[in-house]
Image (spheres, rainbow, N blue to C red):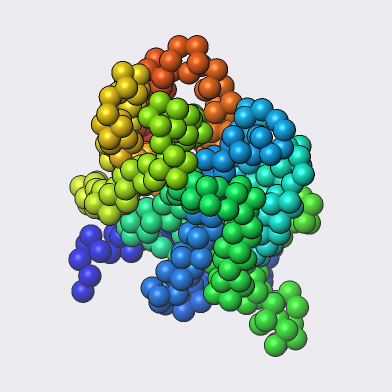
Length: 495
């Protein structure tokens, strides 16, 4: 016999997955609809949450690669900024503008792509968008001037955002809350490691082959990733899977209109799309989502401001070669891996513990306690980096700070994303998209403003500006842990 706690967890799973469980009927009295309702049975093998773990992890691996490759493309060319400017006859700030366009579209893309995945399914969006992203690397590599480079990079950023837009939703489709954070931690390495590994890859490529080869190599990598998607990626969105099952049953039985899928919007397509596209905007109106999106935006704006100036800092101040500067990005990357390996699994542990102490009743706020690790590490590491650079301390002392910054990034982004997923479970993709928009807009625009600020007030005070901002918003996770449920209930929205 299951324990009371296990029974309560199972009840939580059933409540969360509703209406994804049993086949059933709806009485004619319920809105006059007497069609048989299609739902997943308790142990239905077609339910993505009941798939074998190997099949789930293959899906995760494919979307994780998509989520690594597109952010990697956002920063891969940064070691070659000066080379690109000389080759295309423009200013270095113009070249940084190609990052702005790309990163901004990484944020705006999910506004459209996430709701579309909740209408047409995840797999279709992944395949179409990443195929386009792959093809757009070719005109980027051939760009004859800076205007073409900016245009191609901006458009490719939109299509490349598909992994970021739908990854959280796909993971939510396949995993129950108690095991979600650990899996999501490895997936989230993509958006974090991508911008970190990009300059390492770009530094070697620019120095040995030239900047255009960055995009030729990207074409090959993206092509392999797209092919893997065609072969291995399976649909995970339950309403789409059940709708396909409905069509098969009605075709076999020759009785069109016999079944309906609970939770599927049956309005005309134009109405359904209009409603879906407004969903991320409604979610963003939640005070919690706005605040935590500002937090994510600050982290991304800081990260890209530092990354786009690493060549100038270590090349100009310390005399490093382009290749050596690329290697320095390994330090925040090691911070990411350390967090994912040792700290992120504890998010699920804390979640389960707090749920058990709350009489088995789970709350999204139980994801937030470990965010406080990030809220402490980020300002400390930024002040450390700022003033060791300003006083020209040994390069190793400066770059070690980015290891702790990387750890802080993971803890903030992972806990916040899981918080969004748990708060808006069925529409997890739209919730993450709502949070990603502001994050990417700030992450794209702030790096354009950072160089003049660093020139005017120096790296010490310039980077400290980001440190002070991160210090000001640091109490947000603990405040929402205690008051989040009350705020969510007060500002409820209909999705």
